[in-house]
Image (cartoon, rainbow, N blue to C red; front, side):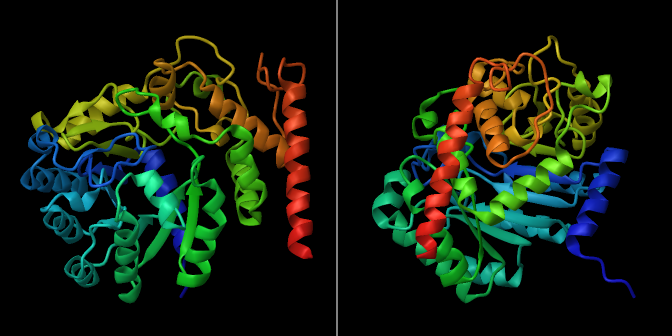
Length: 398
């Protein structure tokens, strides 16, 4: 009997769902309220925000939508926030989703996990729980969260899950205030706790388009510096570029506004019942409180998926677009326009590609490509980054 690896199985399901446009992957924001006040967060609202709480979907509304999602073929569900455990009825919603057979991932800051919650999750285990650790030390962690005592609460929650052998991963957002502790957090997770660790440096504006989170976003050279110091990350980026890089396969593909899985085999639902292409997309949403999931998927999101670009930009034929994360949602949040290239993403992608020796096919007038106005500046950055990497390696070898 042939045993299929989960990754291979998931890839097969993914390819089938794209071909048949089956909504297999959901991201559900349970609430945007949170007990932390993280300086980089795009969505957090005060824990006691009564207006937000009043407007959130009820558990019964969630039950109905989860039932309709299951009937449509949904398989993976991510519950995120805000802080999911800020809702006292979250476990009721979670239990209903479990009974529907979804493979569930939970995103949490871990601070509100109690022994009772941890015991409940043992009885009804999720596919994965991902806890965000914002710093290795109390000083750095609470500089990010803005809440005294949150560091100890997070570690207590992590220990409760570890002690019960829950399927746990740790992650962090790499910020200007915690970048010095990234590798300490990585060692703590992987060596001390024996769990997987990852980090992300893509900080977005708030959903209301406030740019305040960008104050703590790393500069592009600092983002790529982290890549170069992690052999696993280098390998992952090179494999990703080999698999997803390259110019669009056709003129039709090049004219598509949305090139991700949104509206194709994935979707997002916000706390107020609005169905969107993804969690970051704040425009063109479908109200599930006044319509069915089937209508939202087959009509509203299908229509969004058919949208075409209205003008040529350097992103349209870029061969490394998959590496930068540029999409209509990011363009809208940062530039107030879905098609305007986000310069930060463009700089990071080009710098990463040059530093990792990933080929960049010509794609029109781009200031970061050969003959572009900032190409030489980019090459100087790459030189310094590689020198820094080599120095770090030599120091580690001594």
